[in-house]
Image 1: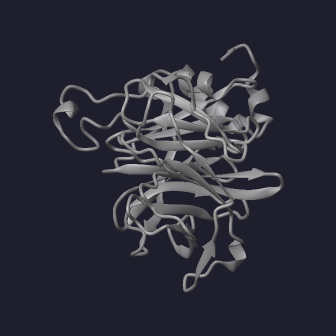
Image 2 (image 1 turned 120 degrees about the horizontal axis):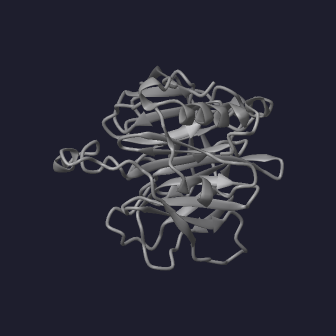
Image 3 (image 1 turned 90 degrees about the vertical axis):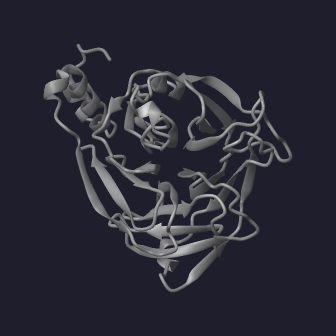
Length: 315
């Protein structure tokens, strides 16, 4: 970042909140860096939500998040409030939850959409990974006592030019018309992308765009522990782009990482720089993260019953 640019210029724009945070953290010595505001806003107490593996903000309403369970769960999306309260559920007709690992929300052609990433592949053997897009249901129709139904609007097959990969981190950029995927079981972790609206019947291979080389890795003692927060703590489990395009968040088992993006910069360049490491989430199996609808906060949770819902306030 050009440190000669007036700081006020960043605050005068919607993206300034995130960029200014990174600016000040970079200028201060590590021992005096002010912590980002982190707190627990609630608990995912509904018994059906027992392995939350993705989070996305509603594009149709404030104070509404979408989540889903991990592999072999019901093909259902759950609507929750920022305090964890259960608001309703939506069953996706004709789908199985083979290994749903992330969810993203976006606006396109004046409509709000949700993308479900059935891209988990622990053994790198699947040839049926896909991204499923549905129209976001009307928040006014949600009810804790009534399950809604939705259908898939379009499907994006996931194929990599060098064979199958495990991916749990997906984000959408409608300006580019691309879906970005971060490969999990690599070091460094490579970035790939696919067209958001491929031609009918087309099965394009994903394009690789370099790597995310500065994800913190376990130390020598942590490498001895075969648990998520041990030897696997550097593996990415979720990714999201701020709706205003100002930053990306990457969640790993060990850290919550903020990657501010400069004006005119592509995502591969932004994610290639060293991130701002936010205060530790201290979760046992963190697998879900997203920005708030206004891009001013980040929500994080983990895979377990009664999981805590955390919020990083970027203001």
